[in-house]
Image (cartoon, rainbow, N blue to C red; front, side, top):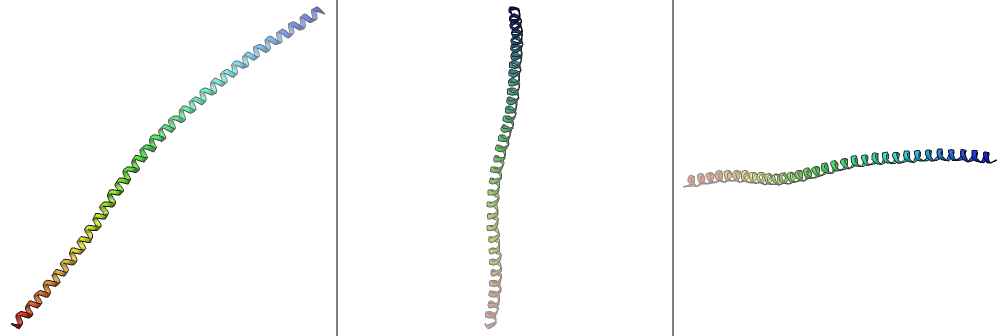
Length: 118
């Protein structure tokens, strides 16, 4: 009986040692797996941070371009208003010149009539 108990004890000890070795192996594998996935996750986070940084730079450049274009539109609008004013002045001047020509013609006609009466 003692011999059977010793054999059972020996077998149980061997199984326990095998279980401990397997447990250590699984713990090591788990640690390596966690380290790998943490490293992969960190790499993805780093890559995403670079993408976000690039997009922020692109957005800042786009905002600056929009401001520049807005200023140009304001300047061109002012030029357009000024051009409209110049055209209105030219039209008024042309009308005034036409009226002056009519007035000169009328004056010449009236002068001829007065000279003819004298």
